[in-house]
Image (spheres, rainbow, N blue to C red):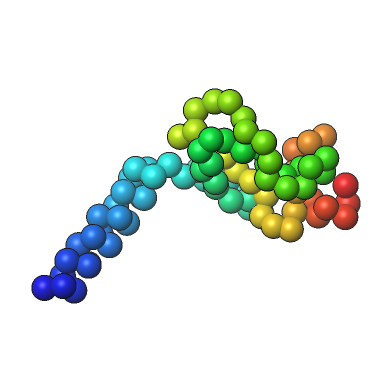
Length: 84
């Protein structure tokens, strides 16, 4: 009975995620979806850490560059920090 209950909850969680009950965003290759509440600014060449609070709705996911890359704000691309 315990195993059946665990499988049930796993199926419900899987359905919620795929049904966008937990908001996720399809991001380009080299990026991943994040959901910060309150929102945070993405690491960039100017500030290579997740920082600050942005004002706006916090149920909208954002795409952040995969580590160790940061966003080049001039080209809007993910690049290694050493190329900034």
